[in-house]
Image (cartoon, rainbow, N blue to C red):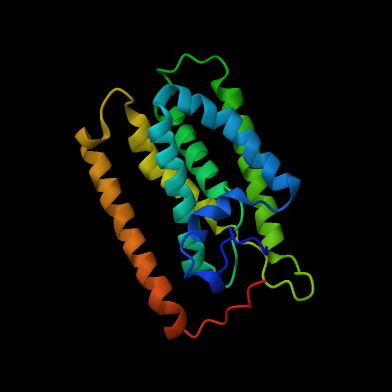
Length: 208
């Protein structure tokens, strides 16, 4: 938690932490889950849809994750790339469900089950870690809200990005609607981080 890359509410002014927290993980369990899901879901998506679209979706999930935590779990830090990973996974799963009949992949059901098991296990682990008693003087445990925020980004923005890899994003009406909604959320979150902590008198634990 002492890394300059980890997001901590006491370091909100260091804006890079809203993204760089994705490089740090709490233990081998979180790192293993995220690595497995990225290999199982992220690599095939990148092969089909290209690096640019998948990177955009991943980073949108990461940024939404830390900003959501700063609004809903104001005392908690964030570590791990789960926001981005869950954006990829939820987008892929929603896309598979909507296009189930047209997909010829013989292992699509198995891949969905494995992805859901891994995602559920990681969310359960994150919730348990968040509400487990902290070590003395360690402060609040990392939040799990980044997982949920990433999933929302995946279902909304991700479905638009993955809907048609042959059509340019700027030619899709749905893309502009999702982009406007995401931009509105970003503006709200920025103003929240500037003003709400002082107005609400939020007690922030000292950063490590």
